[in-house]
Figure (spheres, one colour):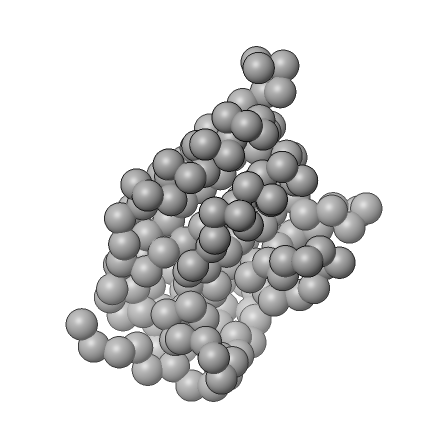
Length: 167
């Protein structure tokens, strides 16, 4: 598997919108690409998605959409997410649609962590797990920076929401 070549900053487009994705000194190209792919994949459902903004929480989401009160309705994470973080977010944001993406990895281990958190902290929103293939850059990002992909193009596990009344 070859390394992804990503400039420090890259303008990417999807669904008529565009965002500049900047690669921090400690970030891998895969991490930045996963943020961009989450953004593009969920933009049709969440048209006000933003990338890498602080929201007044101890954790900073990679991709987020806030409601009018400033609470996250969507929260996307790319790469490593600790079990403590999964549990904390599941407990505090029960109405938030969460996404965790991995780079060319099996989703079973993280699915087990999410399911355990969901049993303890029921939610009304789904929790999606994504695994992007090692060739995601070549498959989903055109030369002009346009990203095109659907859930059918990747490994995707949805952990369904559970009404708090069910428990």
